[in-house]
Length: 244
Image (cartoon, rainbow, N blue to C red):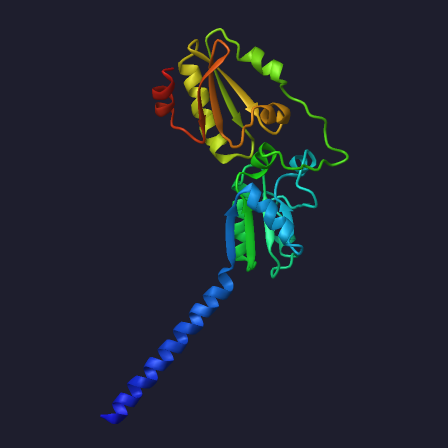
């Protein structure tokens, strides 16, 4: 009987030790992954002198304006994993993109690669700019182009309804919604006009309108905005809300 009890006690201790070891290993490899506001991102950057600041947008986006001292590593480039693997995994990494989607995915990938701490800027450069934070420009950055505010007011002046779709070529929800918007515009030809605005090509207009996320839809009637929506929306709901 005593021998049996002793055997059970040994098994219990082994089980506890194994469990503790597994939990410690999990805690060691899980790392920290947080999505923080632009204000907290700026504070974290200022309070962390050894932070690695990474802009995961395209080189063209980076050249048009970025956070000071950021390094550009394009998340959608085939060599993204190779380039970030050269970073110091023990030091915190601060990531951002235009609206937070790509940098959030990059943070997840880097956590899986064993990085100790990754911080994603929620809302990305759109909210950074909207909050009036400082932006560095590359010396060879292209001049701002696209629609001016006056141009925009002209195309939305009507007559009738004008539906404006603010999006970007890399934005997955934008790409998912676009064919449905085009089909709706074709089906309801004459009821409204569809205007597409690429936020990367119309930065001055986007900044002036304080657009902080995409996709964004705005409906105008005779020049006056009567409805807006942020994010993906089903066409049935769009028609229901707008009456188009």
